[in-house]
Structure formats: C-alpha cells, structure tokens
Amino acid sequence: MSRSVSIYVCQSCGAQTRQFFGRCNNCGEWNSIIEEKINQKSDKSIYTKINSPKEKSPYRSELISQTKNQLIERISSGYKELDRVLGGGLVPGSLVLIGGDPGIGKSTLILQSATEMAHHKSVLYVAAEESAQQVKLRWNRIEDAESNLHLLAETDLEMVIKELDHLKPEVAVIDSIQALHDQSLSSSPGSVAQVRECSAALQQIAKRQNISLLIIGHVTKDGMLAGPKVLEHLVDAVLTFEGDRFASHRLLRGVKNRFGATSELGVFEMQADGLSEVPNPSELFLSKTSAPGISTIVTCEGTRPLAIDIQALLNPTSYASPRRTTTGIEINRLHQILAVLEKNMNLSLSRYDCYLAVAGGLEVEEPGADLGIAAAIVSSLKDIELEEGVVFIGEIGLAGQLRLVRQMQQRINEVIRLGYKTLIIPDGIDTSEFETNQKLKILKASNINQALIYALDNN
Image 1 (cartoon, helix red, strand yellow):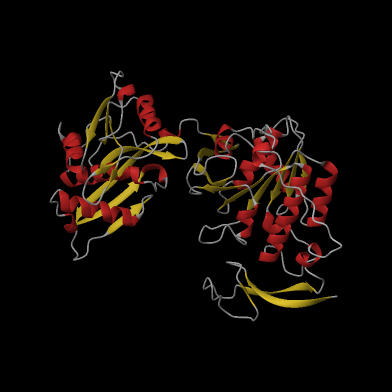
Image 2 (cartoon, rainbow, N blue to C red):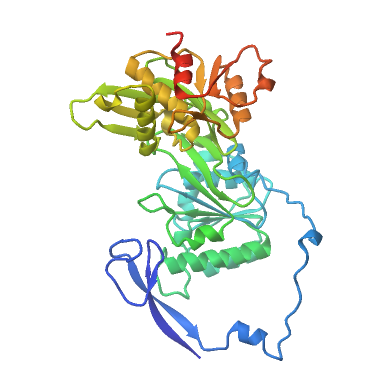
C-alpha cells in the first residue's frame, strides 16, 4: 500500500517543509515555495529484507589494489579551449553541466561542438526549448557542410530516454534540463522535483549506455545554477560560461571536474558565424598602453598562466569617507592592500578615492595579484609611469612582507614567452633555471617597500 503525502519545496534552494510559507525560512525568497506530492510506501525497508533469514547478502567488494586499471579514451569536443577545461576531452559515460546567463552563447558553443564531434562520432542534440527549425537556423550560421548530427525537438523525458535507448549515441546534448518534463510528476517543468528526477533518469541511461552527456542549465538572478544542489553533485563536471553580452569575448570556467583540474579557463570570441577560440588570451587582457596607474601581473587560472593589466586611479576626495570601487577584484582585498600601503609606506591614502579595474573584464581572485595592485596604486598616486616591460607577481602580507605563490615556473615561462624585460617576485624562489635567459631580469624582494623601490627606481 502507498499513500500520497504533500510536501512544500522551495524552488530557489530546495528546502522542504511540511506546511506552506510565503517566505522560505532557509534562503529568504518570497513566493518560491510550491506543493509537491510524494508516495510513501509501507513495505519493509531494504535493511529488514537484507537481514532476514531468507535473504543472503552477496560478497561483491574487492581490494582496491586488485582492481584492474582501465584506459579511458576521451572524446575530443572539436575545440582545444573546451577540451582544456574538460581536462582533455569528454569521458565516455560522464555528465557535464554547462550554465550561464541568458544570451551568453551556451547553446551556440555546444551546438558548434556537437557539430564538430558528429563528423566522427554519433551525436544526438535534444532541443527542449526551441523547435527543430529554430535550431536549424542557428546551425546554418555556423556550418555549411553536411553533418551526421541527429536533432530531436522534445520536452517529454520518456520520449527522450526512448530515443537515447534506440539511437545509442556516443554523445548527447540536453538543451536545457529545466525544459524537460516528467509526466509522472505533477509539478511544472523547471521545478526542483522535475530537475532532480529528470537528471537522475538521464544519469542512469548515460551510465548504462556509456553516453557522454552534455547538459545545459539555467542560472538564477544571482548567477547560481538554477535547480537543486543535488544536480551539481550528480554530474561529473560543472562549467560556467561567463562574459558581458555586449563584449566580444566569453570565458568558459571549470567549477567542478572529476576527471581534470578545476578552475581551468577557456577563452572564446563571439563572431558573426559563431564562437571562435582565442589561442593567446593574454592579448585580450593587456591594454598595450603606458600611463600612470597601470601595472602588469601574471595570474594562473587552473593550469593556464595569463598576463593581465591592472588599472588604478586615485583622486583627492571631497568627502569625509573616500570612495572605493573595484571591477574584477574583491573590494575587501583592495581595502587590505590600501591599509598595508598606508601603514608600511606612510602614504595618506585615506584622502583619496580609489578606483581599481582589471583590463578585459576578467575576475581575479587569487592573492598573487597583490603586488601588481599595490604598484598600480602607488603609480597613480605619484603620477609616475612604471618602467616598460615590468611584471609583478606576489602576495602581500599584513606586515608588508611578500609571500610565495603557486605555479611560479608556469608564470615565469609566460613572462619569457611574451618578451617582458623585468620580473619582480618574492624572495625565496629558486630561479636558477631561468638565469641563463639574458632577456629577462629577475628581481627578488622581501617586502613591499623593496619591491616598489625596484619598480620606481628608474623614474
């Protein structure tokens, strides 16, 4: 026997309650709670069945040292930038979730990749939000030749699973998971229950048929992936597609990856015929101008080093409380660096408004950019241009000391590749293998005062 029980689920955070509330007690959202019906079975539990005298538990575990190693042949997506973020390509039987703002180019990127993979693999593209004619119009802009890409415009989960079971493609695309609908559930498409059940059903068939599944997901107004958190735990990789819709470049970032490094970054450029790869992304984030308040740093996104320009502007304030504004840098990080400069270099920065920005719109979160930020602030304050060809790498401590950062060898190699002349880094790093390079001068500093003396010595 089974009976139906009503529960109330928040569509923003997935919290469940036994009664209706106008405001979710967990996330604070208004009018986000809807009613869902679940069936409760009165059968005996699995634990009771296993421990009954009639049931005999099989022995199926084995020593991990005796488990056979299996070579995994990844599937190339057709784009080196996407393969980089995935860790080398798609793993058969894996689930990859791609999220991003509306109009950012998620569907275009995945349709281009599916078209490239269809030249040598069987690929199914499930369009749950658009008709087949709409997808064909977009496909005509990015591909002129014939393709073996299969297209299915369907929102019914049962029909999608039947098509996957019959066609048995090597790669499948679901665009999007919020548009799929399970007829056995009474809730509307996009609800927590629908997304959870549809994702679980797709995972089962993907693992059973060894299908690489690409799932496109919506995001909320806060930029978070819509739906329950169990969706992100269910998939093997979570990618976010970022960028300004009015700018040309897009950033594909890996948030989670069970088969590769996280925080990997892929750079694309939006053109008339679709998205194209950017093989040298450092060009996007360098302003190529010399002026007071501009410094160059090398940051690491995953395993990729990127040269970026930091821009700072200081103006005398006419108010008691100076204004601090950042673009691409956390505001608290700026406050900390300003406090260190004011304490250790006797600078009256409290009388100046400070504006800080990262060229190209990239979000820089790592502390290795601290030294470059400090150099840009002092350069703008003194109205002095930094020496041309100088790069800053290092984290600043609260006492003004410079700390080591990770992946220094990759960063120095990027500095050499781009042809910079001088590199200022924290002391304590072994740079013996780079001393033979006559074109790069490496200066080591133990504190912020010494580093800025090096940077402003020739001015």
